[in-house]
Amino acid sequence: MFLFNLSLVEFMALFAGVSGVVAALYLLDRTRHKHRVATLRFWTHSDAPSEMQHRRKIQQPWSLLLQILSLLCLLLALAQLRWGSPFQRTRDHVLILDTSAIMNARVPQGRLMDQSRVAAKAWLKAVPKGDRVMLVRADTLSTAATAFESNLAVVDEAISLTQPAAGSLRMGDALRFAKQAQQVQDHRAGEIVYAGAGRISDEDDGFANSVTNLRVLPVKGTVENVGLRKIGLRRSPNDEKVWEVYGTVRNDGSRLRLVPVVVMFGGGLVGQRQLTIAPNSEQSFTLDLRTQAAGLLETRIQVNDNFPDDDRAVIEIPTQNAVKVTVYSNEPELLKPVFSGHPRFDTSYRPTAEYSPATDAAVVVLDRFAAAPPTKAAAIWINPPRNGTPVAVASTKQGATLTRWRNDNAIGAGLHTRDIKLDEVSLFTTKPEDLVIAEVSGGAAALARPSARLVALGFHPMRSALKFELATPLLFANILRWLSPEVFLRWELNAGSAGGQTLTLDSVPAPGSVKVTMDGGRAVPFTIEGQTLRFFSGAPGVVRVNDGKQEHVYSLTLPDVAAGTWKAPPKAVTGVPAALESSPVARDLWQWLALLGGAGLIAEWILFGRARRLFRAGNRPVAPALRKAS
Image (cartoon, rainbow, N blue to C red; front, side):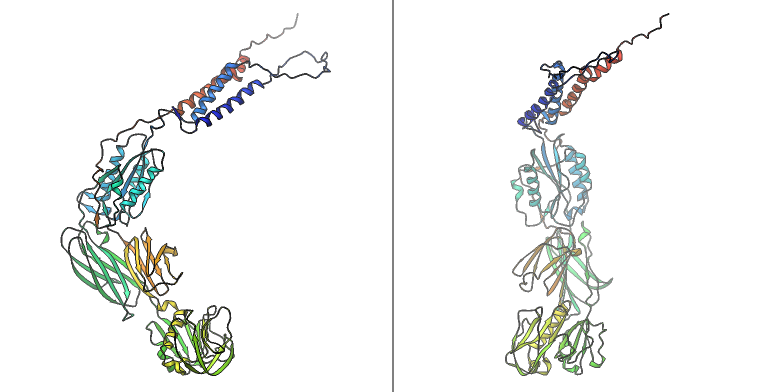
């Protein structure tokens, strides 16, 4: 016998305290006697105070003994006394149910998931009474569907509710999770049971060879699958109106397949390819899509296989509206070469007399005049006058030399010139928040003010020697990128499967410039090593990677079908047993001890307590009524 809930020292201390309190109550008990008298006439009070004497002898030892024995039984029930050895413990089994994407495949024997559930329930029936089972659903992540349950009906219901996910199986992670779950429990380790198709990636680490208590419940049927593995879109570097579409199709079957690929946009056919793919290999295709409209790009492969879930992929192409730019200038021909170089700028030119602050333009260019009242849109002030401008002009210089471009901010980045003479230049009074773009001897010749979303140039680039410099178009490109960053943002759209993703950036990003978010703006953890960015998404969804220059959109909706086949180690047991070997288990006695303790207290109350006095009072003979003497 052994105590399960309390140690022996804790039990003895608790029993000594309880029994001592009960014995003290018996010793300190005082009895009051009730006397009936005919009258208080002859009753006199004693001058000496009455002395109370404590009883030194227990008058009802059998009552005390019965109470102590009853409390002993109740305390043993609380300590959970067990019959047997403390080393005779129940076993903990872990049932790993494969929920990878391939489990939704249909073979002549039925759906793989259904076969796996039937095998898991058959093994569950062989588990002896008292053993506990944990159900783990394993795909890209291993998740415990139940705790260690001795009530196997709970595990059976969880098996019935299990459905395939979109990721691939990571067998090593699943077995590690199961082994760690058994090690942290006080019970003996039982079996680790895997039920599934055993389709894994080529990155299996062989951890199964170290698992000595492994049982495998394989499913029957061969999966002949051809599916899309990746679809991507990116803007053509030669034409902003053209999307380059590329994709990959894999043949996981055992024979050569002829695969027709159809690409549709907005419900209309935009391209098709005919691919001949060898067994256990993949092939890529490309085509061009000319559009500036938003819509759904759908890619289909027309095959008949066991797994249709990866035969279709859909990518949403976002709208890319042109940015409206209004130029107020009396000499628009000077600025037309600057603003006509980008196809996503919708530029209009108006004379300064037609200026109105109520404009729908995103960017307003004000060429050498004071706009009153100032516009609320983002503004570029070119050589503004001294009065009527939001940027104060400190002084004006003639024949100044441009001494420095400030390359420490986004607008001045990459600008370099040498010995540029400016016929006339205005010097601005700067604020602490201002970004200085260019300097001449004596002050700032160009600045940006983030709070007002404006850029002020104290000179006209097209009326000086700067018009022959490469720095001029780069200057306006940097200004427009700073005012409207979405214009120069390049898009790359991808349709893939959930799991780990690796992305190669065009350049090493600045610290804090990269954002990786999922649906609803939720941040996704990522790592950057040089130009390589890695992130992980365990569930289907849309992930956006923005590095300030380019936005990559990952539509993780394709199922991740692993190409490799897992081979169980030779020492693993295969199949459903008739019955698992049951081990001797310590028996609980607390139920009987609780009943015995409660019965003892009730018996003591009946034999020695108030119930006995009530019984005697009820049976006391009633004195006959007095009669009047005749």
